[in-house]
Length: 265
Image (cartoon, rainbow, N blue to C red; front, side, top):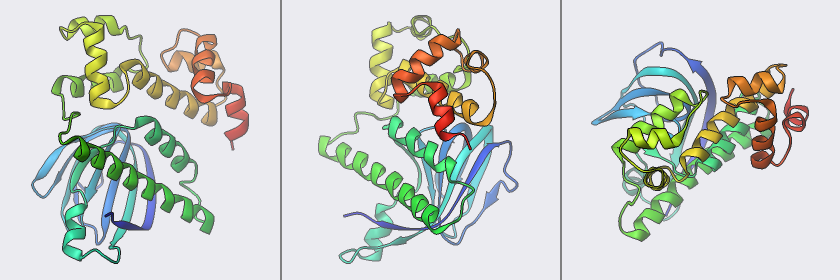
């Protein structure tokens, strides 16, 4: 049994330095889908920090406290909740999360973010339907992962403080040289132990997560600048343009030049 979300609006904020209001209240449900950076939130009795992979839900007429820790890029959705025919309102509200939930299928999440960002300034009917589709996709992704946890009878991916800290560290240093063998040693782990715990927590290996962050920035620079591949490689943590091109084409199934030609406006 799942809720049906009625899409109202979508706004994309990029590299936001601070919130104009550190506390606000909305007349509808709101969702912060974090693409980059970190912020601290407080909703009712729930509080914590949110970063990439996290969705933060706030119900209507509930104070939403928030403070940016690192420059924040995020998708802001507003929506209403429509119960299906066999639901009652009380059960419906209980199903909706309050506060932060973490999605583990980060490849799918990153893909959604990429397309959501492309359409963020458009307001035609087709774009409206697409934005509504991606809101539903985020919701169904959360529901599927929650149901998988229920079937297993235990959340085997409960928060691992060391890996959570490491994930944030990778976000901060993603565009610098990183040797995971040294990172593992600094945490008192072997490379195999580090990879296993990171995969269990985040659904991807450390190198896959690092590659996602670097390629996300590379795609942005390809579309928004005229930098050469060598210049982009230097800004994304790669030794040279040749190596970036090899990684990019393997993951994206096209060369950087083809991506730039196909998607640059």
